[in-house]
Image 1 (cartoon, rainbow, N blue to C red):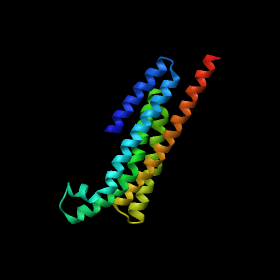
Image 2: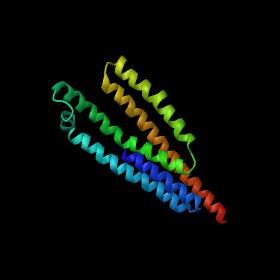
Image 3: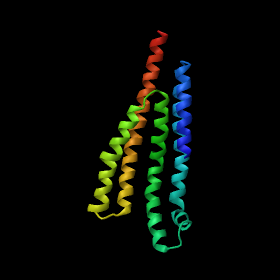
Image 4: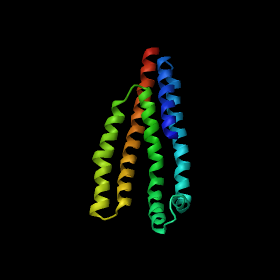
Length: 167
């Protein structure tokens, strides 16, 4: 939920700054939001890595559930960074007026990459729930990386349009 809030703030700040024709502030707002989101999700991922059994034990006393939960939290730790990245980058792009790129990137990353990878790992390689979560992680890594690049391109476009207006 924290990255979602940061994403909403990014959309508002980028959009307002572009509306005021303050491209430099729009770029700073987008990058600042992405950095804050990455920092928060890094802390979240570190918590998952440093105390997976303690977290799993909060939900069940069953040793089997704790073992499975702890292994799933290791995968969840890996995707925290990219999940936060994709959510916040989506907000920054929304503020810049781009809603199409996140929609297409999410469709491709989850339905055409993450789900097939998860199915292969879970059902053909018999990795079970961990395989599904790894597939989700691959999808998140894909969409997070693509949306970061999309924001970078949008930011360069904003910079270029600003220079064209000045000249």
